[in-house]
Structure formats: C-alpha cells, structure tokens
Image (cartoon, rainbow, N blue to C red; front, top):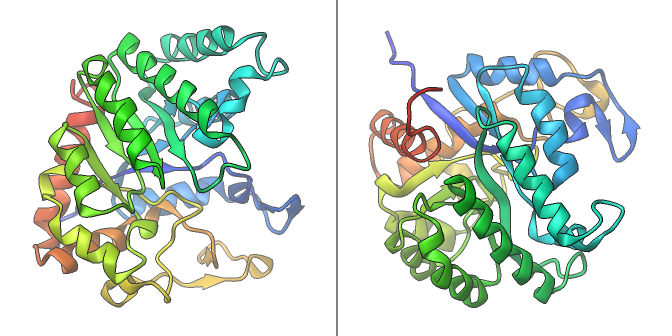
Length: 307
C-alpha cells in the first residue's frame, strides 16, 4: 500500500470569488468551494493556510477557516494594498488600521498562524507607491513581534529595500517566517536562509530554467510548498511542466463539472505537482521530501503541535 503523504498548502487565496463560481463579476457555475476543499483533503492535504491581503480579506478568511478544523489564516496587509492604512473609509487613521489588525489577531489566536501577506512589490507600483509600501511593511514587522508570530512575506523586484528593512528589524522576529512564491536569485535566497527564513515555492517559482537552477541550490530543510490558488498553476509553457506526473482533468468554466478542475483556476489539490517538480529537479525521493517539507511547515506555523 502506498504511503499517504502529509502535505500543507501554506498559501491559498480561498476567499477569491472564483471558488464561488464568479469570474470577473459574472457567475459561470455553481459555488464549488466545498468541492474544491474535499478534493484537496482527499488528495492528501492535512492543512491549508488561507492568505489574507487586507482587513476585509481577513474577515472573509476567518468566516471560512472557522468552519473547518484543517483551515488557518494569516492577518496583514499586502504591499499593493498598503494605501488602506491611510484610507479613512477603511479606518480613521493608520494607527487605527494597525489596531484593528492587532485586535483581529488577538481575537482569533487559534486560527491566525502568521502576519501577512506583507512585504514589497515593485512590479505593481500603480497600486501603491514605494514609500507607502516601505512604511507599512516595516510597521507590520512590529505586529509580528507583538504576537510572536512568523511572517508570510511578499517579495517582488525589491530586494535591496526589502533586505535593508528586514535586516534592521530582525530582532523583532524571533520566529522569522517564509518568503512565499519565491522567484528570486540564489543569492537572494541565501540571504533569507542565513537569517532564518524559509522559502515558499509554487508554480510561479518554477516557470523558467533559471528558476529551476535556483531550486537546485535550496536546502530541503528550508523549503515549503504552496499553490497560491487560484493563481500560479504550473502551465505547459513552464520549464517545470515536463516534471509533472499528476494530471487533473479540467474543463472551461462554462462547462463546469463536479469531477473536473476549471481550466486556468489553480486548486490546493495541485500542490502535489509542485512537490513532483522539486523532487525531480533536486533528485530527491518525493516521499522523503514531503516528510521534510511537512516538518518544516509544522515547525514554523504550528510549533506547539496543538493543531
């Protein structure tokens, strides 16, 4: 009998309306959120961490995770949404926004496992400018310190500023965290690893041959895996696709069926493909890899083993 692997998806955007059948404001099929969840758990997932990107995301995420013992969430503000700190329709002041984040964590300690998604994103400055991103990224590092939680970090085309902010704030982060959806260089990964952080990999981390060369250099005891669903699927155009062993039937959203995935909509069950690619690229046994990644994830997000 095959050994059932234990897997945790450290990042899935399950509050996205596509899991309710709604795409770009138009309903295309029935709400299949619970079908997606069942498919994930039947494929071996033990836990899923639902990613939150702002206060309103957090409210929706908590509604979901409080209905299932295998679901957990993050609390924080994504770099592209950091204008919300200064938007008085969201909170009366930046200090109040921070206070509301704090209250959300304090009131949900059994379900909140990280501060984030937070960090810097210089690929999408049309959403939020550099100085605002930097200011509220650093502010959220204090949030992690306040609650002794690890960080769920977003890092895009910003390494020098990211490194500077993180380096002067390391003393605030006894539990460090994970750089999710990592697609940087080997030297950037080395900085994070040397400072106690883990590297989170998904389909967006495995697009090019250069990405795969970076993965070869990463120590297994510093790896975590994720889907970033409904985004970051491994596509046929990706360099990693040739290593994918597990394929799922899929149909266009207009032809939705209960037994098929929706084309272009990534799901947590697809995390096995990320595991397969890493196993092949690093030439390590997939079951041993799964065990180690699972341990890494438990050590960071669930250190008390109370979950």
